Length: 192
Image: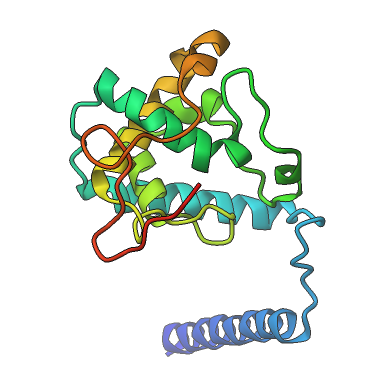
């Protein structure tokens, strides 16, 4: 009898705690108490939760992707794509990101320094699907997989590149087709 009463008390206490936590969360959400301004950085526990969620989600989502062999041709084809679409936020080897990107929260990582932390499949998944609440757009709706694999190849090559090698790559993407820039079927071409 005492065990049953004890379990009921513990269950009631756990339920009361859960209701209290939900009430606190709803109060924060509905009153606007949490500052979402990019100029006000996340509190440490929130930053940790968001970062850990991002890392684990990308790892899980990219798990079913099979990367092709990343070739020097793909690296070259991805250079202009990267310099046109990614360099503004992520910078390059020996090249800082655009000054306005300092206002992003979270800041876009310098890929020349951190690309080794991710597998090709993870880089491809992030390029294709983007990342919520980071400013990282999804290129999948507007670019074909071959183009995104070229970008992936270039990103994965960044850590081994010198500033001179980086600068020697073209700053604009190539023509549509083999080794160049292509959009997903049914999406309009853009003019850079």
